Structures are given as structure tokens and as C-alpha cells.
Length: 136
Ligand code: HEC
Image (cartoon, rainbow, N blue to C red):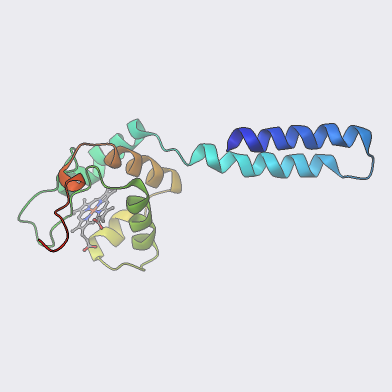
């Protein structure tokens, strides 16, 4: 997607050479600005592992297979969809999902931290991929 946006910006610039009526520079700047968050959205699993080591591992373990027998029970994060983890952390931050432990854990995370830690946990092998068949 990035490539398309950059190509658009480039073609907007060349159109500008032939026509003086289009304000090319602001348009190109806007398109480049739109391209930036797409690159950012990928997440850095190594940085995420550092956050997991320092904070999350206490309950979710570094391998994402959470400790058993805690109350409340921390869910398994290994292999969870990245988007799901990102959304859950956003909801905890905004208090849209209430769980005092996780509301406190999510509060100090930056948007980059959320992307990174989600990248890390979603990439781990875990049992969440083997869901039981419906009705069983
Ligand atoms: C003190 C224990 C503890 C720590 C530390 C902790 N968590 Fe949690 N986490 C929990 C518990 C308990 C829940 C279940 C809360 C609920 O019912 O919503 C949970 C839920 C979650 C969920 C929702 C998962 C799902 O299946 O819905 C995510 C995502 C999550 N934690 C990520 C993290 C991340 C990332 C960190 C580190 C920044 C972290 N947690 C640190 C205890 C912890």
C-alpha cells in the first residue's frame, strides 16, 4: 500500500509541472504523511519482547502461555491474533474493557509499545490455533 501512495505522490508532483493550477506540494506532503502510519503499524517483536520480559511475563509468561491458578486468570496470549491484542489493549486503556489489573498494565503503554508487544505475543506458538469444532 505504501508503494501506491508514494507513486501517487510522485505522479502528483509530475502533474504539477504541466499545470500551474494544482497546489502540488501540500498534496504530496499529505500523501506522504498518510503513508507513514502504514510503515509504523508493523510492530517490532524484539522491542515487544523487552516489554514482555519487564512487565507482562509476570502473569502471561514470556512464552505467552499464562500462569494457571491465578485469580483472575490471565488468558493465553501466544498465537492470539495481533489485531485482537491491539484492540484489547486499547480497550483497557480507555476503560472500555474493565479489568483493574489490565487497566493498570495498559495505561503506561505508548501506541508503539502496543504494536510491538502485540507483534511479539501474536508471533509465538500456542494452543489457540486448535479451536474445538462448533457444538462439541
Ligand atoms: C498482574 C498480572 C498481569 C500482568 C503483569 C499483565 N497482565 Fe494481561 N491480563 C491479566 C489478566 C488477569 C487478564 C484478564 C483480564 C480480563 O478479564 O479482561 C489479562 C488480559 C490481557 C489481555 C486480553 C487477552 C484476551 O484474551 O482477551 C491482553 C491482550 C493482555 N492481558 C496483555 C498484556 C500485556 C501486553 C501485558 C504487559 C504490558 C500484560 N497483559 C500484563 C493479567 C496480567
